Image: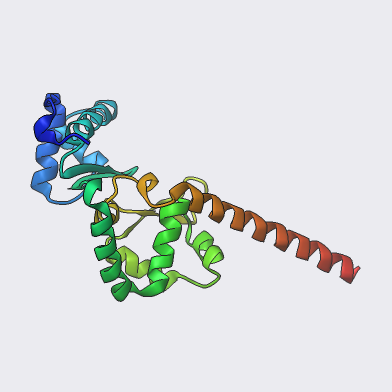
Length: 203
């Protein structure tokens, strides 16, 4: 990768430059809605500006991190492994294996309900999820498919600590995601088979 000092400067639009300034001054994540309001830009303009900013930062020590609802600046992927390992070592001591497992499910499977997380882990995760929410590692959003449930998503703060710009940059992301999907599918098939067998036995 060519260092930024050796690359031609990539110009940014005024909106992209102002977005960078606000993110730097904030020192943490900003919601897409708030950033749109601050910049006086519509959603489409904001996404274009953030794409420009991400391109301008490529190869530097800073990276743009985005989720569906938030955006932030953090360390770049070139230092991701050292940052990730240091964070996981500290986090493992603070939230334990249960917390790491819940975070792994949400990071690799995607936005998940508590029922889905419980199903994959095989235990109730209410207290663990509350802890992760209080630490700012998970965010809770409405579930468009069921108003009675919430979806839990990774925050930009979590991604920043892991040294990645999106979940797709996590180690073995596609492989682990596929394995989780296959596990859920196999469990569902097993349960349906068991229910069918029980019904037949009772008849």
